[in-house]
Image (tube, rainbow, N blue to C red; front, side, top):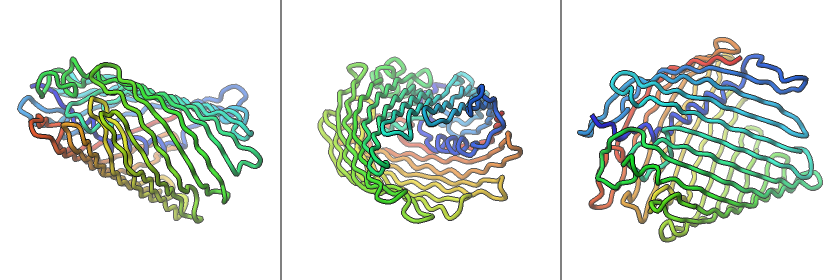
Length: 410
């Protein structure tokens, strides 16, 4: 059997559920106090057993199911303060595939470091660096499974004169993403970068960006926004394409009533030499209803312009999403999230692609330091391909995942 396409590389619901678990674990144990400061270090260990209905495809294009055991040791470091604040979250993730898929086992991980300086002063500094190694990516124009290594470095310099009602922020960023094949073998014609192991690494790229963010707090928790950003992409090889673009937004964000928060933004975006030029209107509409502290419902819609890796990755996208959660009896949390995204690639062999995800989950706080959770994730992808494009299994699939997770935090 040739394990060529692992559709789990597109399971965005898995990422969303992991992110929710991390947020729900915001009340760990006592941790380790750092000297005489208020900073604390919280080591943790998370174990997860997951059944995946669509781990990989055989050379006949048949999906194979299997169990995966995740072992995730990690740490959370929080050191708040007015002159300087530090926040670090990091973990390793050993994914052990059981049975006939054992050769897919490998090490993943992620880490995020945030440094804030003079957050209550006139001029501040915010520095964030995030690294992630994962088999789950947001790329929709490829039909093969990828292991993605990303590093995102962001710098922001806010200027808050007077009482801080008007804030001007200069921003800059550098993103680097490289790829590795998820499995040996291939299920596509030779010289196809998306699923040829010898060519996957040539899809890497760097993105550089600079921007300006203006905010006027005309109410204590509500601001008018004007944003602008310019970015440029530098491919790592001739298989990629140079690209650049811009986004401009204006709108409102903040708390509109005592129980309703939201973002209402519109604008214009463009990507050049992707290849050719793509431009469109932008929208970011989100509302979050918080009827009380232990429950919330978020609904959103985003229309954007972007570039996926490869020689013709420019696209426009529509994405709708929902996220709801509720805490019962102070220790049981139920959550449900889902999303649907449609991307149109005007110059790619993949003319359009869409991805639907849905994931209910429950979590119980057994003790202050121990949490147990379970969930289900459904993913369905379809694609519109140009004539003559190989219809790889990864372009059209559906999958179900069921998991049980235990996490202990010191």
